[in-house]
Amino acid sequence: MSGSWQRKRAILACLNQGEFVSGEALAEVLGVSRAAVSKHINALADYGIDICSVKGKGYKLFDPVFLMDEAKLLTNCPNRCFYFDEIPSTNAFLLQYTEELQCGDICIAEFQSAGRGRRGRKWVSPYGSHLYFSMFWHLPLGMSQAMGLSLVVACSLVSVLQQLGADNIGVKWPNDIYFENRKLAGVLIEMTGTADSGCNLVIGIGVNIAMPQQQGELIEQPWSDLRQVISDPDKTLLALTLQQQLRKDLKLFEQSGLAVFTERWHAADIYLGREVRLLVGNESVSGCYQGIDTQGGVVLDTADGLQHFVGGEISLRQA
Image 1: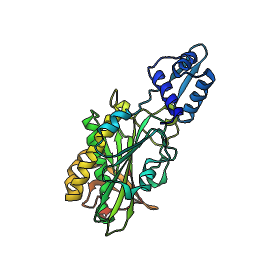
Image 2: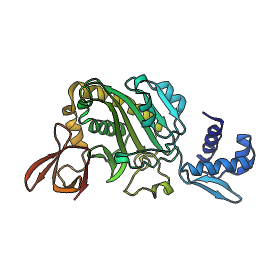
Image 3: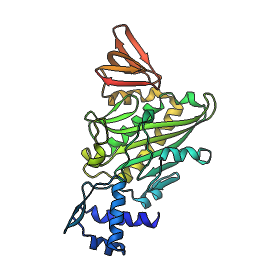
Image 4: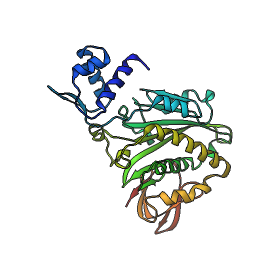
C-alpha cells in the first residue's frame, strides 16, 4: 500500500466514527499539515466518497465506508488473493495472468476506475463502498462446458447473502441479484479459450454495500445496497464466504452440470410464474415466465405455446 493511500485510509478511519473531526485533529493523527489533509479530502471526493465540510466543525462522512480487513482477508483465503486500493478492473487484472493462476485465485479492489457490467455498461465503483470481486476458474472441456455457468454463480451469491443474514433476496435471469425489486448485485463472466478445449474464466461480482447518495444518483435503474438488508455488513467475511461457496458450487457444476442447481434457481427466481416481456435483439416477446431449461435458457408460455430462448442478447423485463 502506498503512503498516499495509508494517509487516506487513516482519515477514513477517523471519519468512520460518525462524528465531525477537525482538520487540526486529522493533521495531528497523520503527522502532516492541514493543507495536506485538505488535499487528501478532495482526492477522496474524487473517488466517490461523500464528505461534508462545515467551518468550525471539520469533516464528516455522509455514509460509512466499509473497507476490507486486509490481514484477515489474506490470512483466511485458501487461494492467492490480490488486493488493491484502486485498479482499473479486477476482471481485467486476472485476465492478464490466466496462465499463472489456479482455480479459486481472487482479486479484490476498493475502487475500480473502469468497472464494467453486462453489455459494456459502466459499473459505478466508489471507493470502499462496495465489494468488487473477481475469481479465476478453468474448465477443462472448453467453453461448451460453461453453458449456464452465470446462473450457478448467481445461486452461489444468493446462498452467501442468505448465510450472512440477508432475507428477501432473489435472482433475475441471467445473474442479477435483487432485494425488493431493486438491484443489489451483478455478475460479469469473461472467458478465453475454445469450444472444445480448455477454457479460462474470470468471474466478476459487484455487490452494493453502502451506496453514497451522490453516486447512487448516477445509476439509471432502481438499486439497493446490503446495508438496507444487514445492519452492519462485514465485507471481508462476505468476500471469504463467497470465494469458498463459489469453489464448492463450481466443482459441483463441473461434475453434474446445471441440473443440480435448477431447484435453487427456481426457489430464488423473482419472476417465476409472472407475466414478462423478453427483449431478443430488436424484437419483443411476451408471455408467462416458466423459469429456466436444462441449458439455462428462458422458458416462456406464449400465445404460440412454450418457447425457449438462450443467448447473450436477451433481456428479461416485467410486463
